Length: 329
Image (tube, one colour):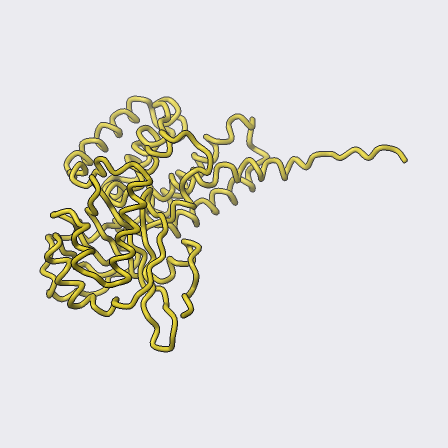
């Protein structure tokens, strides 16, 4: 029989190339939008627009910048008229543990966490991964939301993704002078937000973070509040979006967990990763048996102590994190 010649499918090849950029694009869109679900929607729309216009792609070598140009425009469209997303610490001073929680604010009011598995590259230089983790911190993503969309894009492209000013100018249809000016204004805005307070000094070793997370999970499941607050930095923040209330310091955290938070006694906790660092999924006990999703907790740390416990009371996030819909007894 004559040999069969297999002709490569150019569409399949292009689709594969699109997919190799998905995680990096998701990270870019997440920093722009402050929401995991919106970031994934933006990337999907980017892929759809890119596919529809693929016949206009001049060279495969230009694919990356072409995808980022589309993603930037998608994000700009989504940010038109949008309210700035925030974290509770942006909205006012800390409260006492026995204060009223306040009214639940809508989802779009808050910066949302995102699973590392959807953001970080599977294979990359460890130094690059460390830099990526730093710029996924909740405090950094929330700070980005203070910037106008175009300044936000410039800062992410220049300082997070390390693009040259000429490349950013071509992507955003800006002159190099305009790019540099936007970057300078963005840096000045971030400098006023005191991001250094929340910088994870000395906490970049994954093994150390994992050990601290394991101690937190153990203390929480036993509901040993004394052991749990012993893990906290003296200025640790404790927040619970969608509620605006937040408290600061081991004493207030302990008071809250023994008071309004006492319903979490008997919960189960599953370790995970979010926003470049340790996180936990808390399942509350179900009266009918087993445990049901309650909150994703982003755990921030510095020098072997927990500096932030940020509880996102959105059970729908568990699916995005690839977590079980419930735990059986």
